[in-house]
Structures are given as C-alpha cells and as structure tokens.
Length: 110
Image (cartoon, rainbow, N blue to C red; front, side):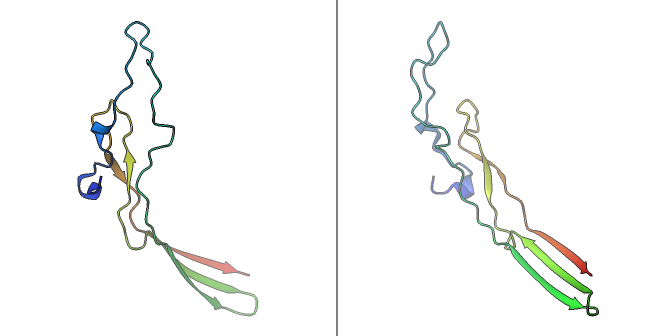
C-alpha cells in the first residue's frame, strides 16, 4: 500500500483469502498460490559512520581513539510484518529496527 509509513498497513488484507478446508479431514482442498518467501518487508535504510584518530606515544606504542555510529541519521526502519492470515493484524508492520547507536572505542597497540 502506498501510505504504509503512516498507517502501518503494508499488505492489502482483502487481497488474501484462506484456502478452503475439507469438512471431514480439515486438510486444504487445493494448494495456495503464494510461494514461500514471496512476501517481503519494506527495505531498510541505514547509514553507518566510523571515524578514528591514531596517536603515536613513542616508536612502538600507538593509541587509537574511534567513534562508530550505526543508523547515524536515525531513519525509522519498519519491520515485523504479520503474515498469518488468521491474525487480526495481518498485513501490518508491528515493529521497527534499532534506533541510532553510537559507541566510542580505544585501542592501545604495542
């Protein structure tokens, strides 16, 4: 659906139907027509950044200080698509990817 970012409805639920079941065996009368892994979640947009600076302490010792940023621009990546047709939330995105994450690291080499 075009406006899934605001409504969280990613699939058009009326476009999907359950396979009819045989009344006695409760087995499907015919196979369904959607293959495995045919439905995918929306793409993820992440921008990761890493910067570092290395300092020489003496001839053999170096100190490196760095900063890593994951999902640096904090873009919301929707996930958790409900694909069970029996679920009342079928076709909805129920979660998000991780928020911005920053870490500082240091390394002493000798």
